Amino acid sequence: VHALLVNIFGGIMRCDVIAEGIIAATKELDLKIPVVVRLQ
Image 1 (tube, rainbow, N blue to C red):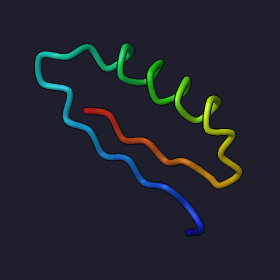
Image 2 (image 1 turned 30 degrees about the vertical axis):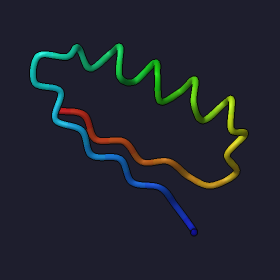
Image 3 (image 1 turned 90 degrees about the vertical axis):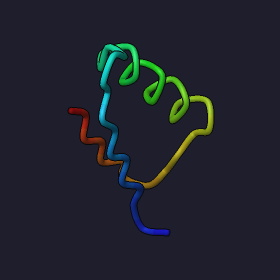
Image 4 (image 1 turned 135 degrees about the vertical axis):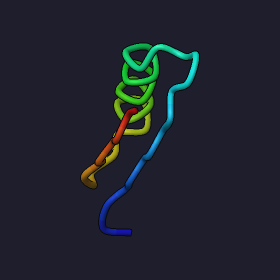
């Protein structure tokens, strides 16, 4: 795997909460690959 693409349609969920969760998960997993996130 060279990169991770995450595409999320927030709907009723606030995108900043989703972004904070993704950041926490990447730090916890100690990912060494690029993560591209699209929040809508």
